Length: 75
Image (spheres, rainbow, N blue to C red):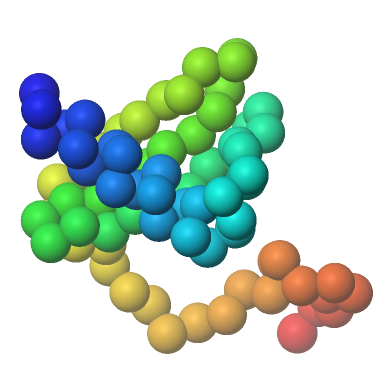
């Protein structure tokens, strides 16, 4: 259990490095952290921090969906 808590702390530390020391997750926010042997998804839902560890590495697909860009057009 100590290793899981450490992994969550490290993921949150990396989140703050990326978005600033005062950054906080808002309701519905989530982020992903890739470790050597698993993936961790951290989200805030219903006022609670939720974590989901997934065994293995994520699959990578060389494709851009464009759903997070402003003014997205059909291609």
